[in-house]
Image (cartoon, rainbow, N blue to C red; front, side):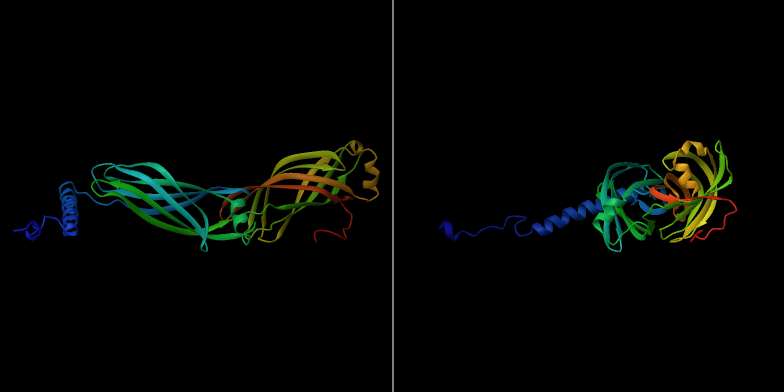
Length: 304
């Protein structure tokens, strides 16, 4: 018989690679089930326990997500990576990965803290519709990647939502200086400040720290405890006692006495409570104008 006429024997596995791979997968699955039956092996679980905003200022917001993770197995499980994504109304604010996140202890539950930081300038530069003073919704998607024996890496996905502010610094104006006693050596007066809140949330004023110059002369500074509520997109009026020496003003004093007013510079910060936690908000005002008045003067331009 010619070699060309010789029947070809079918080699084992030819045309049956799919079946062979399926058998391998079934074998691995059976081994996994045997391990699970023998040692009580199970998939870890993860849930969001809490979300904290430990620090917020004009530049950034720190977010810490507490994830409660339970490992039902008698062996520690490596937590390979933590993936995260923060969105607001479908807009991606930030995403990233935390590598080598640790190990889940055997037979127990523990809280994994996922720290994230939002940089406000990055957000505002990317999305022009997001502005200082806004409160924006957010959604955080977190996936814990764990390394399970036999099965390898698997993901534990979870999500949480909330709101976060993008703070606007307060505008602080010195409306007037009203003196109760006047002498060239020392004058006692009251600073009348107007604090504009341009945020979409209320501010609960706790303390105010300031330094002030009047007609180019530093007349004082202090950190004072003050209690006031400043409504969102509203303003508050604050009175601060101060004393200074008029003779230090030189020739500028006569312009002040004649009611011509004086230029001032004011800078400092306010500590406030907000619905999102405490904040320290700095302010700075250059080139303002104010007047020195007697305490019993009737004001035509007060507190408008």
